[in-house]
Image 1 (spheres, rainbow, N blue to C red):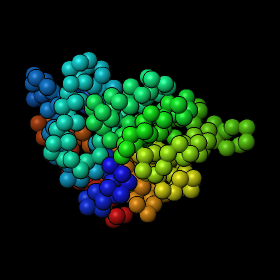
Image 2: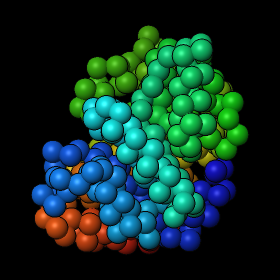
Image 3: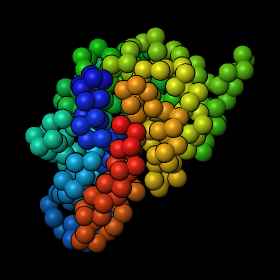
Image 4: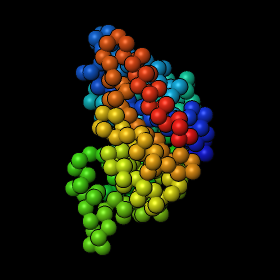
Length: 270
């Protein structure tokens, strides 16, 4: 999926919402405790309730890997369900991988060929070698960590280099040389909205994947104010605030209501 196709979906749904599938079985409602595939059943219900509002889904690999082979199997089931029933949806593997050489090539093959994701999050600390294999796939995306929403981003990302510029700026400027607006996007957290306007100056055409809206306190209005570009340029993620809004048998209904609420806030900007 290229940027034009992604933008068409955003315009059609009047939304730039991504639902994060951080599907933790410990938080599932009681009615899922004894089913054969609880993660898949949970995801399937969440997707069915939110797909009319979401342009993307972002499974967080940790919650599937933690369940071993059964968890990974249910991740594959989830991607297959999306491809079959919602082929227009953009699917991001939130994996935060970082390696080089044939290891990076294997990661790219795993996510793009075997698991059929559209995009994967990457930590760029090891430089171009760690990202290059992902850029060799047509219509696939490298989602590069730039300025994240966690408090300890100050440890490295916000630290100033010798020239007085923050490290995240160097990361973005270098990554802009590696790819283009059809295969590179950046993770920029919603909890620092004032930085979005600054970062948008560095990369006016790239999409931003924006976590931190909802449970972490980020605001759709502030993100839109500072981060929008001519093709929207935003994929705003909410995970816990949607999928765990309720843990009763009405969990999917409540998730749909929360997704609708966020999408309605986004609609005025499309």
